Image (cartoon, rainbow, N blue to C red; front, side, top):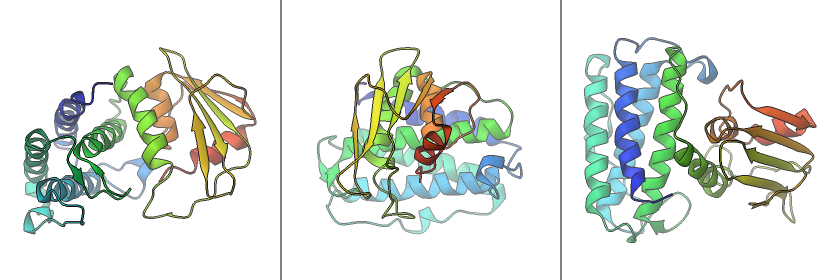
Length: 242
């Protein structure tokens, strides 16, 4: 996927988030219990503010936002989120995508954050749509790229569970609406993982569209995937999602 499209997806999917969230701030998100839509809006705004601070700082040391990163009262929450989104988009567009900056996965470039924010935003767009019973499929190219991004980031880095153990049995993901296969294997220790893009037989296999596979690896509720082999193995790999 063309990395330049990530910023466009951040803008488009956050706009949809805001549309759905309007008048629904008190709606519960069952699969993120006990969070409500308001809780998710606060989280997304805080993430946007944090990333904006680091992109604008343009250093390899962590930076933190000022008062703009503090969520306001509920009556102003969505306006604040829209402002944080606008600031993030402007910062990402203005920065050199190859510039080295701090990330929670070590020193990477600005493009890494653009991709991370595209995945973050589209998954949370699904979350709020699911709460409103209006869930729509994720763009196939973005979703397939999102699975790759999950393999590189979400599967390996988590502030809440930094020393995760990976299942000993193997998992194969197979995309049904375009090219895309991933083989998950434990590395030389239980804390290492190897993922290859290949057609292979795993102890468990999950088949589905790129949209459903992305949501599945992030532990979201999806009904349209097919699971073959050992369902417990598939569940163990899915449970690794941060």
